[in-house]
Length: 546
Image 1 (cartoon, rainbow, N blue to C red):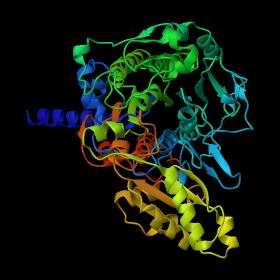
Image 2: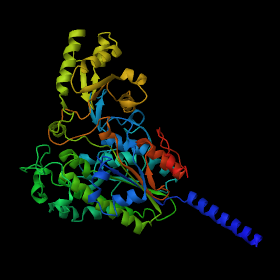
Image 3: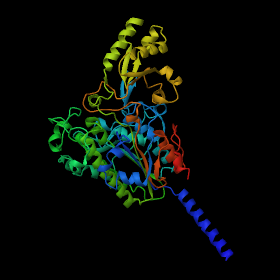
Image 4: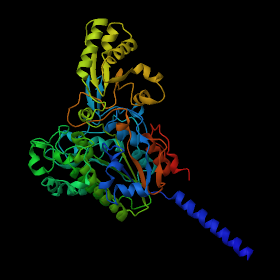
């Protein structure tokens, strides 16, 4: 009897060990990275009453929900956000300091993905002349390509070129983005493809995009389901062109012509639905997740950002957008279940930045907020530099809340650029709404936490300005009184969702700090492959502590 019991216990222990080892070595057949453009952390809770059970709630209830997830750098924009997620690094390493920045050699602003050496694929327009050459690090998709010796399928999709190209990096199999205007097609560039696959041409030739635009956008649910903090028609939102007031319903068929034709699709919830349909087509037509070599599908949803800028976080429009988006997420998950198999794939969902509520609205509620007139600030800097050091065009450019000084002029006058920069800091701090300012020369000695640490992580010595301004919480730099934007080092812009779901995800709620640069090394560790070349993040402990 004792021998039988011992034998049983040994056999049971062996089976448990084998099961654990099997779980440890099981790799996902597919990873789906979902980046939501301009999604604040609080949306998951604030809009939960609008969600069904199969979209966001499925991810939250069954996945690993990281509640204290933040960006550790500023400025927080779309391009830098996607770069940070997929390189595991901040702009000080990956070089993506904004969607645009000032190039001293060219003496003009440059766009993150512009590349005149490339030609469009699927388009003859400038929208296809894009590439990743400004990105200074490899990405997750690149490392997976190298690790799997080219056998992985790696595809990135977004309506915005930067939302596809930053994840795709240098050698993904494909990156697709949406050309609006009168084209209305998913396109790519010669950096990735010689021609569009047949399935993409077939998708572009469907009538679906016109069906979505020849319709009315009205509330998905009964109006009583929505929790409104202000009237639908209010002065803090801006209209589509040719509309008298920003309020439901929106007759899209009547707005197409005056709102850029297919560009309008980007700025409605239907843009997310169309992106989902295209992602599902890629999944199916490219046979992703159908063998034992891990594939990677990056999907970035852009409509949330266009609508967020236009209507703001407290609008009825943004609530309805997320109610509809929840259904898109559910559709994508169901297709993954069907085509890849539940348990065979991993999804992560995060955002590239958040957004501040409209400052004019905040002021009306007696909350601290306002607008900083940066033109006045720059003029004051110019005047005081002239008074102190003599005539000349001292300020070369201003972008991303950073002042670029005329280094050539400073050198001609035999001045110390560090001292001039520190003088500019003193001038800037005279302005209401500038809570902090710092010279680039002083960033390396700044505190190791707080706002200055965040600014330092977003600063690249060759691409950023000499002086960084930090506006006060709730303030924006000379923005429209309607709508809102992002870019600040504060929680409303830096605190975003992070959920892992599926294969190897440790379900539960986690509150220890995690950072946007930690996503890439976590996935790298799970796949046992090299981290992206510029990675400075750390694998998230919750995945490896069991």
